[in-house]
Amino acid sequence: MKAKRVERTVSYCDDLAAIEAHIAIDSPRAALEMWLVIDEQVEKLADRNFPRRKGRVPGTLELAAHQNYIVILVEDATTITALNVVHARQRWPK
Image 1: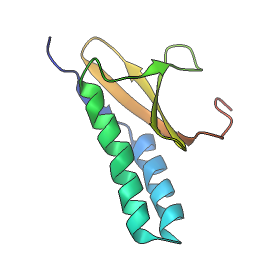
Image 2: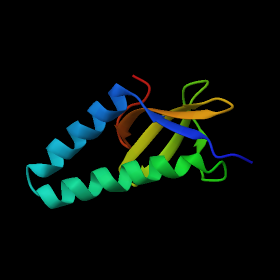
Image 3: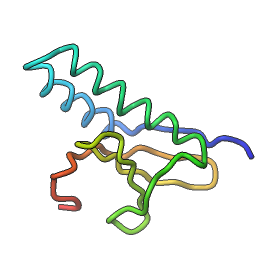
Image 4: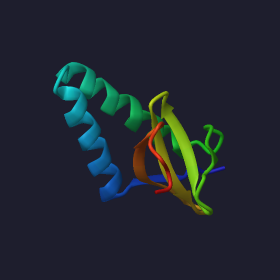
């Protein structure tokens, strides 16, 4: 079975940049590490067996990329798209 293509939306990239900027206030190194942890988890979604769960919004999936961050996803037959990154305690959907 062929791996899926992984895409990232502008809103996903903006969310990740905001998370990095927030963490970088106290620790630039930790900020970079968090970016890498989250984005590496997203890249692993190309493997159809990599864990993801049904999303709170119909038609979406969620990836618990870190204990504090959830990636909101949509998936079709060939592609999985990262839409947003939200804090685990953030009210989602708004």
